Image 1 (cartoon, rainbow, N blue to C red):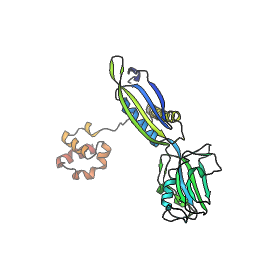
Image 2: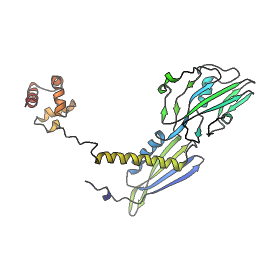
Image 3: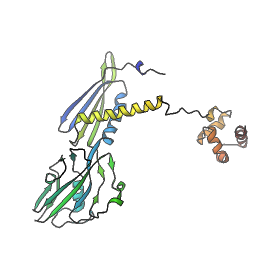
Image 4: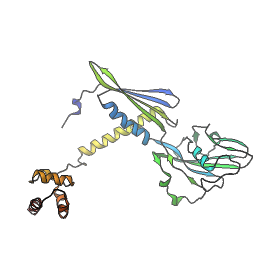
Length: 297
């Protein structure tokens, strides 16, 4: 067995810098040559796809039953109101995974996200978000259901059978609190070597998670995954392939090449495709006899 400790790893330093409000940069160095992109791409994918967050999943506006309606007194079409509401970013400050936010106004004017109220402990992270404009004094009721989740949930993946209320407008949800991730890899010197990597990861969040918690979560996900893969390998969960390959059979090289081209690489596959051999390009009657002799032995 190869000892991983034979590799001479330098002492890696990881720092987290706050660049702006909800914008951060992780710097990792020095890394072995090539590991900047190897680790950076993995971390980036986890950041964008695997971090839990909160998103709007259901919207109710007065008595509206579909996005192509209009609401009396509201300047925008319902579709535009829905698109604005999908930009709402919140954080549920409890163990609850669902919450409902409500707006009830009766006066003319702009409707913004800071007007939302909730019985749950919910923080609206972008309170200045514009939703719509009420052009006259009328009742306007807007409700949004917030849910905690991971990744992306398309509207057509929602269980429509459980949506019994025709006033529920279902929308696709992007739960990830990470908005953008950029990688940069530079070369750094370690002793007399100048080809080690320095990895910088710049990312933006919606404010529902700190930069430190996000980085720690992503590192933990990858560490856990690699550990599980290693454990399953050493415990024998991943069994070695013991089937005899076609290339090791007592067959001519040209015949082996024909079999492999047709994805026949084991004796079992050869037996399964016995009746299809005549359809293989380049195979001859002599080849067929050699195979039958081998299979019938």
